[in-house]
Image (cartoon, rainbow, N blue to C red; front, side, top):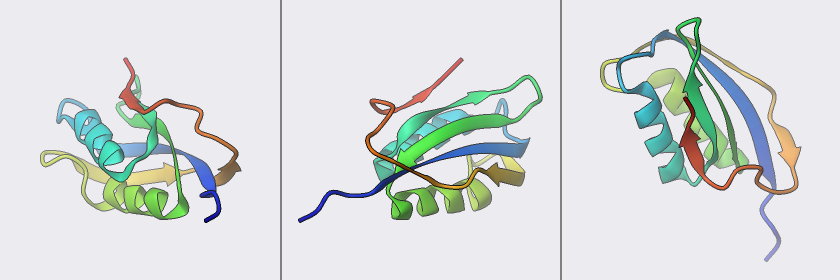
Length: 98
């Protein structure tokens, strides 16, 4: 059995994504999928982050960020960077940054 190819991807979520537990739900979903990375609120009212995992895991998280979010959030759009191959995880787990 070969090693899994890992990828990294940056994201920024626009809409009503602050003060609605968006980061908490994002971290929970990322951990459920086995992703590593982080997310944080920005001064512009968005949530930014980085995620690392397999293509499948990243695709599932992208779908969640675009279509689900936290129960009280309103997602107006998400920007994703291109997925870039990485050799190993750069983060120990998925965390919320201040």
